[in-house]
Structure formats: structure tokens, C-alpha cells
Length: 262
Image (cartoon, rainbow, N blue to C red):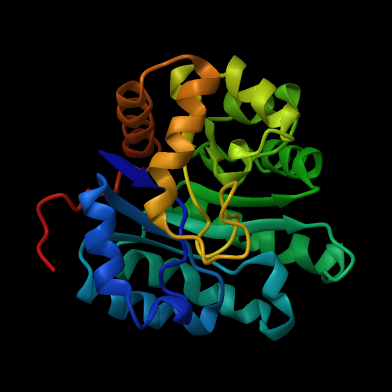
């Protein structure tokens, strides 16, 4: 059985067929879903979805790319919200170094504040790191964060991977690994230990090879797992088993949804 450790099934693009999609996923063996938060205004919607879909595990946080609509005061509600709503992690938080992103000092302010909440609650984090691996590693070391988590959509070097792993993180491996041009990521995945990575889709984004332009969904987790199995010359069963164990280890509050009826 598989777990999608990072999918945005709360997004409105899934509103019309969410029930059907989840049933399809479960027939494919995908029975666990972690939904990271992106905006303060969407946290309550996540809570409502959790009540409707007990197989969803929720994380709450403010995504660095969407800070233009946020106030730092929103972070003051984060700790209590996580405690009251069974958060498995604080996230999606991090740094996004991109031409259209907001100034780095603002992003750092939000990141440090949310990291402090995670530390206070002894929760892992879901780390967004676009062109910011080295800077985030330094921040985590500086803040002495010790609760680990997942580096979402990892595409860095083996040296960067090992640094995060030493801090207690696992790497989120998604659709990027299915592309033959992703030579750096393929090299990293070959070298990782079984306990160093988890599966993710980042649905509805990050499509697998051959499905570009289509809405990505957790149905594609087995395709990602198969690519990893081929790269590592391991069985599909071992990839499913090891990555699921890794999710449960990194997110102690995660609960699988195998026996939950819709």
C-alpha cells in the first residue's frame, strides 16, 4: 500500500470528483494522503475536509509563495490551530527564491515564526525549498530544529540531500523522477538508503512524464514508485513498504485510512 505524502486535495480543482478520485486511488493501493496547508484562509476548509475524509492527514502552514495575501499575525493562530485540529506537521513552509516571489526578508520572517511553532509543538515540518536548499539548511541548523520532516519535491545534489538527512529529514520524491532528463535526481535516488525518502505527487502540480498538461493526482503514485524501483533495481513492493514506513516514522501522528469507508 502507498502513501502520498504531499498532495493538495483541498484545492477546488478536485471539488467535482474528489470522492471518485479517492476510490480510484484506493483501488490502486494508495490509501494514505497528507494535505499540506498553503494559506491561513484555507485552514478551516481543510478541517471540514478532514471531517468528510478521515483518511486525510492534515498539516497547517503558510506557503512562502503566497505571502502577498498574508499577515505575520496569522502565525499567532498556527500553534493553537495545529493542536486543536490533529495536525501531523507544520507546513507547507519554507523559502521560494524565484523572480515573482516576495522579498527574502519577509519570507524568512514567516519561516522562522512557523518553525518556532513546530518546535514548541514537537511537530515535524513540510519544507518548501525552491532554489533555497543551502539557505534553509543554515536556518534549520541555526534554529536547532530537531523534529525533522520532509523536504518536498527534492531536486538538489547528493551533498545537499545528506545534509538534510543528517538533520532528521527525508526527501519527497515526485513526478520529476519519471523524466529521463532528470539525471541529477536519478543519481541521488540511486544513492539514498531505504529510509531516506518518501513518495509524493504535489497534486495537482508536478505531473509525471507522459501526462504533462493534465491534472496530477495521487493515482500516479504507483508510477512514481515504479520509476524509483527501476532506478534502484528494487521491487515495487519494497518501495511501497519502505516509503510507507518512512512516512509513519517521520509523522508520528499520521494515521492510515485503509479501513475508512467513504
